[in-house]
Every structure is written in structure tokens, then in C-alpha cells.
Image 1 (cartoon, rainbow, N blue to C red):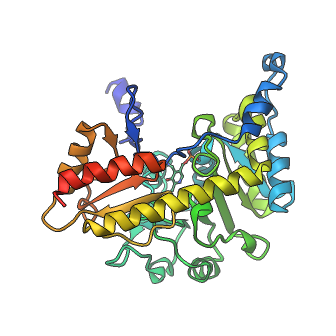
Image 2: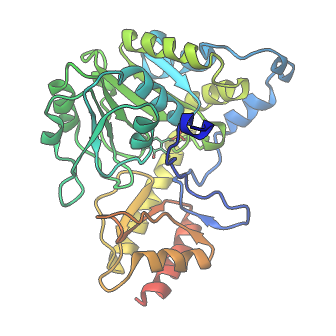
Length: 351
Ligand code: PMP
């Protein structure tokens, strides 16, 4: 017996690379545009001497701004250090039973890592052949349900009806709907939170609000669920979010016009890129996110193209996993970046 026997050992989630050198970075679904100028202004005008104090434990500045923006009560809102922190707290809080929790076999690869690290039993549900969700898989006894909608890395968005059917069936479980990419398309289930006390909707400021570097995430749910979540949070770390993040998040959520313009630009570039990829023989589901999960043309090898792009200074994401190892996940960058990508792909696929 040695100390090694008492150590929790886990295969961690592997984040996309953050290269130091200058590359075209289309591998972690960040926003290609800067955050709102209001964010920069709020940070510049902040009273930095206050950094000597602990930040607000209840994240009031941000929670109040979010409640106000979404027309909710502050008791229905929880904020954390990116939606990874929020989701991790949700797993710890809501999935303490013995029955397995359910999530799709191809989805955000952090879900099974949290389940393993917290000792939560889980079962993955097969997607349909075309990578859409099979709702019937989620209609059996379980200890909880997690669904990313739109899903990642597939980019597929399911209708509100499909997701509501799953929430409705699972009244005895907490159902988490991870809406990290909802601002780029798809139908949110947020309007349903007053109707379903078992529903949690998570969001992030890392993508559509261009604040990945600040780490800001949040979720909405019934007051009771949010209280349970806060009880667990205060049992782990009371001061999760730092002062600059609270200020930046509140300023970002208020600037609706800048947000609208950013989303429009990204969607426009996404649709342009889809057209070019289609012309070259790539195929993909109708992505509703800020990335495209593209299957390489017949006769091409996805891993080779991924490596070819990398050697040309273009970073995309490749998952060496069954069912999806013939695809690449390409984040939507600026028009110039996507132009450059298309040129490189033409060379690599010889089209
Ligand atoms: N959910 C999904 C589906 C994601 O793709 C990501 C981004 N990696 C996250 C949650 C976490 O995002 P963040 O922690 O930056 O809010």
C-alpha cells in the first residue's frame, strides 16, 4: 500500500490548443471579434483599489444584470467561472442518486469526465445515423439528463418540441440543457423554466459575447434548484467569480446592439463558408452554431487534412473517435480567415 492507492486518478478533458505563435485559430469556437467596447470601458472605469476586497459571493452585479436582461427573478439565476464551472457544479448538485445519468454518445466531452470525477453512474445514448438526437433514448428511468442544444461538436440543433418532450418525460430527474451555442441559432427552452421545476438551462459568455478569456458562465432554473446549487457552491468555494469578471459580464449583457451585430456577422460568414465547403464536396449537418462539423470529401482523409492545415498555420479540431473521425470541427472566424482556410483546403483536397 502506498499513497498512490489513495489518489483519485482520472483521464482529464483535453481542451483545444492555445498556441503561443500567431496562427489562424479555428479550434476552440472562440469569437473572432473583440468584446463590446462597453466591456472595455466598464473595466477601465472600475475602482481597481477594490481588488483588495473579496468579490461578491453571490455575484450580485452579474446576476442582477442577467435577471434584468432575461426578465427573470434573481433567484432563478446562478453564475460561475465559465459554463464549465456552472455545469460541473450542476453535476455535483443534481446527480447524487444511484441511477445512471443520460447524455448523447457524441456530445461535449467534458460530461463523462465530470461524471467520472464525481463518481456519477452514466449511460450514453446513441445518436441517429445522421448525428441528430434520438429522443426515445432519453425516455427510460435515469438519475438525470444532460443535452447540449445545439449539440457540440455536431452543430445540430433540435427543436424546442423535441427537447420539451424529454423534459416533460423526465419530471423526476433534473434535465440540464446546455445552450452554449444557442445565440447562433436554434430554439431555446428558456421560456419553459417557469413550467418545469426540473429544468436547468446553461449559457456562456465565451462564444457569442467574446469573453472566453474572462471565464463567465451562468444558468437559469427554478428557485429551488438555484438554491441547492448555491448551497453546494458555498460548500466548495464561496468566491468563484472575480471582480473584473462580474463587471465585464454585466457590461456585456447590457450591450444588446453590439451583440446583435456580432452574431449577424458570424452567421453571415458561416453561411458563406458552408457554400464554399459544399462546392468542394464537404458534407455536414445544417450547423446552427459558430462552428461547422464537416465531413471531408470522398477519397480524403480527415486526419491528414487536419495535419495539413496545421502545418499551414490553420488550427481546427479533429476528434479521433469512432463515427466522427472522418470530420473536422471548424470554428467560424473572420471573413479573411475563412477565405484563407478555403484556399488551403482547396490545395489539400485538390479541388
Ligand atoms: N458547453 C459546450 C457544449 C461547449 O462546447 C463549451 C465550450 N468548450 C462549454 C460548455 C464551456 O464553455 P465555457 O466554460 O467557456 O463557458
